[in-house]
Image 1 (cartoon, rainbow, N blue to C red):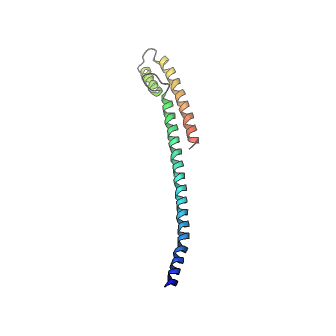
Image 2: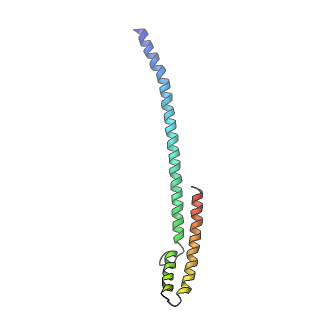
Image 3: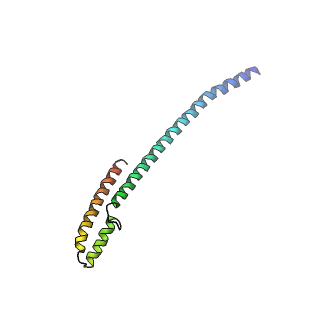
Length: 115
């Protein structure tokens, strides 16, 4: 009886060590996977925030009634109606829009380089 108890204790002890090693290995892999997923999520959040900032920057610089694109569209509408001085108002609005578009493209390009 004592002999079988000794074998049972040895077998239990012998399997406990590899079992704990396998469990530890699994925990290390899970922690590594979680850290990598967290880093990817943070990177995607940062890229999304940079893109959003680029969109917001694109819309700045327009007239007080709306965005630069809205001002160009409104000015073009007045030109199409043949209103006096409409063309003179269209050109500066177009230049402002192109400047905003250029800044947006640069910001978007910079954001995409980090992606």
